[in-house]
Length: 113
Length: 114
Image (cartoon, rainbow over the protein chains, first blue to last red):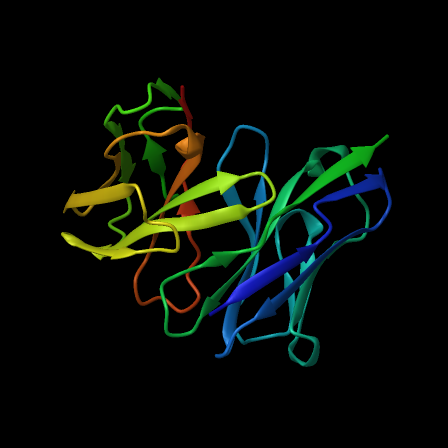
């Protein structure tokens, strides 16, 4: 069975500082990997996805993530945090043959002025 | 743009009531999903449907059922609501067959069972 672990349920960063959100997955087949963001009182929006092309994936709002097979990781970064990045972020994995998406527990990001 | 619409943003129901949560998508997606979201647990899959009248259990189906009579509509049913079903419920849809296609989510229904 697939599983996703997000290290840290809460992360606090200063405006302008690097944002780093960690995600590790377990999957018995080559995965599709996703990062979603959820702003208050909204559903989830896709930030970026990895689908076995380039290992460094760029998404919206200057977010990017790097797929590292040897580490089974797909960490999300943004060079400079903005106040509008305050939200909850979810990492998710889907096996190549399946329909089900398995989510991590989420990381809530607080951005301090 | 894909639009997934959940009919209610907030619902308050009493223990033992039968509850219907409705979801409609406008992009002719084959796959539809119901998740519940709880703090610290992320999203957990309740049921999904890969076509009309087809359904499959997710990870936590107990206490729930679903209905998909038309392609665009996927309903989640709580046969007899209980307080431990108080949660945020998220519906999503996805295009079948497209490599790595993402889920598109509705804005959620926050259900409180008293």
